[in-house]
Length: 232
Image (cartoon, rainbow, N blue to C red; front, side, top):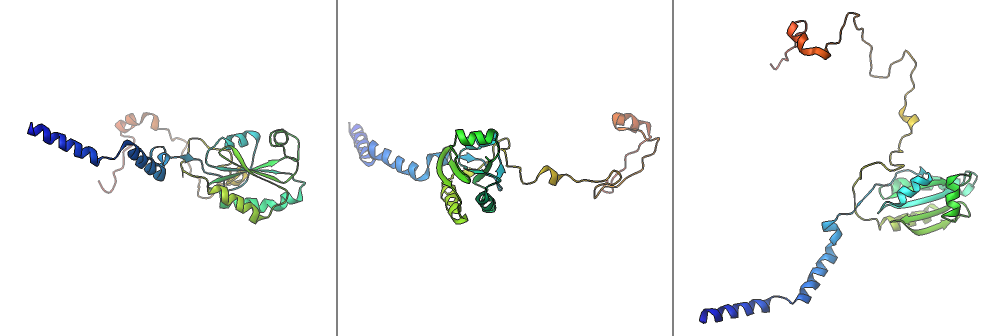
């Protein structure tokens, strides 16, 4: 009886020390709110942006707008638009500055085609230049007409600050990610009798034979002896 009474008292004491279910849920809620459930259990991932403006197609735009946590900037311009040409260097500099979190899509609406049709029907673009900023698939800002670099920079800074999650490259490249060098930049033109730097010609005897196909038999015949290294 005494033993049972002690157990009851100990059980009651432990219940007094425990917080109520409501309080416990409140503590858990505060901890998860401060730490962030996503950051603990489901780290957010995103693609890296582009460090230079990308001359985009309709498919390029759709692919980038579907990506989370990247500020996508649609630059609707025309080659016959002086303010567009004046803003181009500033956009290039900002694309480089915010290239980790932003992707600038250049869309030439000055000539007929799918891009101009998309600009008119989907984005209701009526003048150039027009800049539209998208984050997580939603339009967050629109700027029409000539803009100073400071005005555009302020928008970049505001919305790239909302981009969260560590950069984790997903499989497959996105349009514009590898546009740092053009094909022409990577090609080296040489004359027919000129070799690229670092390469030399060798004279191959006419009686030489390919021995790699049956190397074991060649070694066994003694016609080709392996050379031992100095360490051996």
